[in-house]
Length: 343
Figure 1: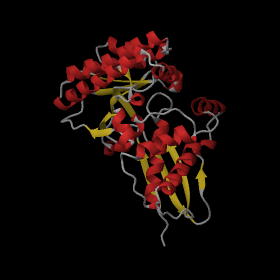
Figure 2 (figure 1 turned 180 degrees about the vertical axis):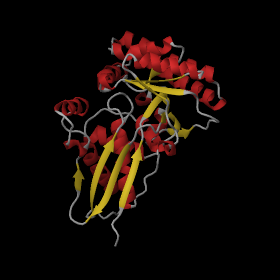
Figure 3 (figure 1 turned 30 degrees about the vertical axis):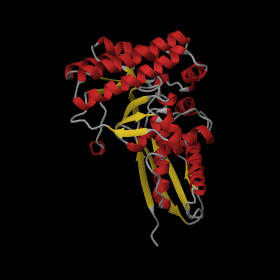
Figure 4 (figure 1 turned 135 degrees about the horizontal axis):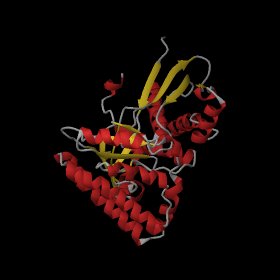
């Protein structure tokens, strides 16, 4: 019998409008893009389950130290191990019969910039689940799969995580998400719908890999204040939820001007809330938004701060943006939406 060899990929995402309300029963819009990816290679093995660790080889001591700074001392293998365990548990919990004695060799690679708000860790987990589902011939509904991916981090690894990143990486599209509390409690998932547009707006993405910072830095205090019933926090979540509805309509109708305003308003509300709650916003992260707006484009955080997203009106604006930000050490790119363009 021929041994099976499986390759799966998952891609980074940006939160376009609504974040950070996804963990607070809000609404969000996000999309994946194909400039980077996390890839899993899984091959059937006759001897044992093993991990090929690409994290053990470095070009220099500085390269090693940079890796530790971004990933800690554990790296991505723990994500694979935790994903495999959660997959096994899901099968047991739901009476899914699989041959867990089947052995395989698994390795991962990822060129997604880490800890800059592009969801690199969840991309690795998503790709791992896809490989396991293929290998064991198990189907998991798209609505349920993001819950399992999140639980890899929250339950297995004790890392705070919301659903937005996992939902958009599973659906791999431009996605509208409504995390209405009653629906979440009833169905154990939100309303997830892909947004159909005639053409994608002129999006850009910019990031600084040297300013990585974990999401828990800002989210812990926001969670505390929200759970405490803070009026400003709850009003901000309602604002972002309503803003997401406006942005979805703008996307569907090709209304670039309204979408432009929504993107800016999303960040402005975040900055206002953080100031009221005395949550530290890293100055270098905020500066990226300010620098982008100086050349006439819209800008907001793509996640927790290390990357920004926005739209530009004409090509000359993008040229100015790229020149203006790159001289400050900020990487700027146009997102690719068709994977074939990367080959």
